[in-house]
Image (cartoon, rainbow, N blue to C red):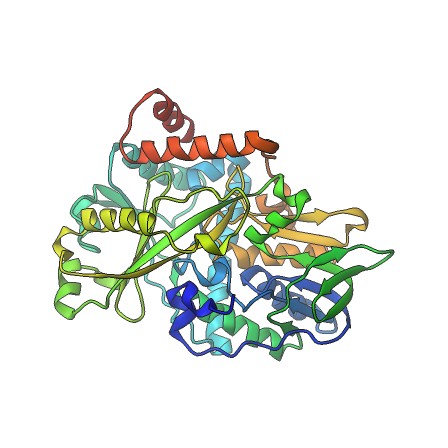
Length: 452
């Protein structure tokens, strides 16, 4: 992990000095394992709720090394696959409450970044969700109808020409636009959260892997190479890396998501791209593409293939030339007018998912001393802030309306055990990729009917 700067564009963009590792034993009230968005937001929420609580964060590499520093930098209101799917799975009242809570959380995030002076290149250009085919047209329609049924006013329908006035993708058929979404540099945000947490009195230790988390007697014991941390309570905020915990692995699967970035575009090339306003863009494929301008003038392009990682996160899967080539194919297909723009490089990262596509927070083991949060399915930049509030309330034994949201109230669906697990996940993924790529055989047709 010494080459962490190479793991994404974001991790290499700005100078960063990691915190020192743990050196010696430590006693705290709450120990947090994982220095990404969930762990650091939770530490901050805990200190805001009770400044006297003593919190330590243990990160195996550097803050943001995992998904928090490798994603596309979209902070969205999405919980679940989409608004239509959310309403179908949790009912209208809970879906509406979740959507409103996510709108609030994005505003709180933007305010926190501003007030703390975090240099995360945060903007609010909105999110354009587009269709590139008939099935995607239907998903656009379903989201708009769900928004109306729930009494929300945050999605605006755009015709093809209206979409193409925002970004000149000639194959865009229609879409909807949401103003609340943020774009940001996720690694810079993670590092800013680390510094904000330290200012509040949180102790952060990087290069500090936790080898075991035990429950001897009436406390939690986190064992690291540099010493043991004894705490009253613990949070496992490792997302895909929670695959190492058998009790969590039954709900969790890991896929490897990929992103490529272009070279910086010239002014004339940006004019051809027609990216008025700089909105983030995501399409309505089952395994979507997402793209956005970066602060240094590139186009970031991600999504499409996301191979299943049966053994959990593996640094050897952090580069995939074949997947990068398939991503470039769809970039060229969408922007044929940018045939002179070179793809500069790409990266991959582990993404944790659950069967119902919701992140989940809950308690683990005896004594209710260990809390976990996982499963953002690639859309965790925004929901991690809200989920961290749920985790705060679980750690402090506080009753709150947040515990009624699906991230806490809807239990994950367990995955099949043993070899059957890999067969189901690999088979499902192949069918979904074929459906997205235009195959209309019996299996893909069944998958489309199930997911629409």
